[in-house]
Image 1 (tube, rainbow, N blue to C red):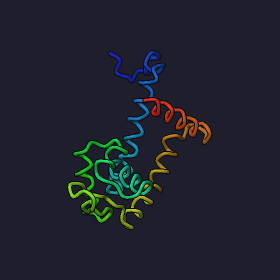
Image 2 (image 1 turned 90 degrees about the vertical axis):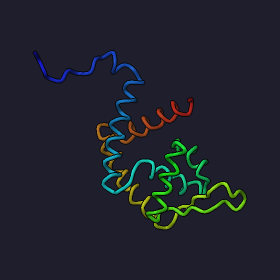
Image 3 (image 1 turned 60 degrees about the vertical axis):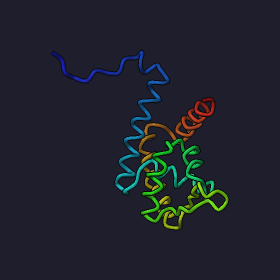
Length: 147
């Protein structure tokens, strides 16, 4: 019996959903390794990036803009507060909500994550020219915008 690895069937490689999923799995493994080496996770990066770009936010809004489940947001925010990367305080207009704010240490951590992630992205797209990599991102963003 031949135990060698077989190439992926052409029928699968022709499916956008299959190719996108395989690329996402590869990208997630790569970014997870980068973030783990820095004591962080994709959720942490997403929340830090959102707070940096949009400013202070409720935990619910933070979850919505990052696509992170509400219960995961609470746990991740708590972790980031403990690490000194975020501040969490009651919303002065609605005591039932918390407002989350990026701290200066959080901004520095985000910048370190960004630098390492940029290198990982280059590694992921190494078989493409910079123009091709930009086109891939633009086309996939259009696919996402439609759904």
